Image (cartoon, rainbow, N blue to C red; front, top):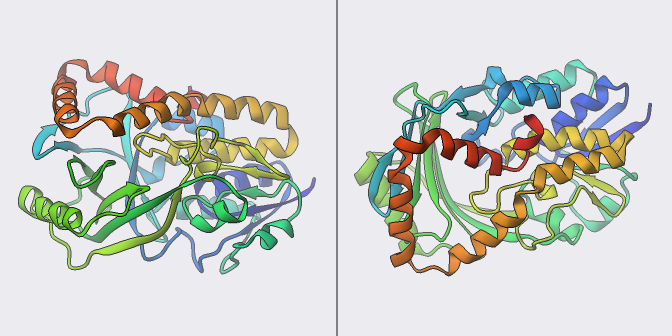
Length: 354
């Protein structure tokens, strides 16, 4: 079997590495950070998604269940008004921890990869166009939200601007609150898992204003009683929603995976499930590009209508958005099963797990 190089030891890169190692390939993973888990200044942090855990295991060959926790509580704050979501649907919303702690999904995947003999080289950045040109053909690139690979490989993106804080939770529940308000054209959230508390306000394309940051932190303190010692600006983020044609499995002589491949919901930015399943797709592309491409097309088929919907949504004034969101979310207790099926089916990658 061949030698395969993977850039990025995130969810996609490690799932690809695990599958390739099981197939007998010699796998090397190049990771820019000096430890597992991505940007250390941002970790640990909780991340959520609808998951069919058995479906993920069946398609990817990786069992993430030990690192996944069902949500205990979920709230949507729609322009200052709270809506508590029932969370009783058969399709579960889960939270995992990202980062370097033993409780993280990253650590779980790393342990499995290393057990199979995958060579993970930390502190090995691949940044410039020249760096990528020197890598062999069929290198898998799974670098997530970091901006430099988009620029090096000339892949369209939208810059991300964020404002975040992290700390410890005074409870052991798994919770999330989403915030839609005038402080961002996207949304904000705060969540907790494994004793970690985290909050993020973000926006694509346009920097956050000082007033927006102050408004969110004030509302978080007053409405949820959540205060953090330190807030930081998130710098150097990119998201593959710069073009209708962002989703791509192949780019030049490279294979792409996860968020970097455009496998993300362009409306709400759900990307973990897409990262997991396209790690498997990228591994498959080493041996059968046609079959892998068919899987990839199924994974991203909902990207395109969601991309257009988000463009239209951004044109609507708050006076229209607010009643639409409030009316829609107020029906959730009555239509939760239907709504969760529709929502999950719209998350890139979901169809490959069914």
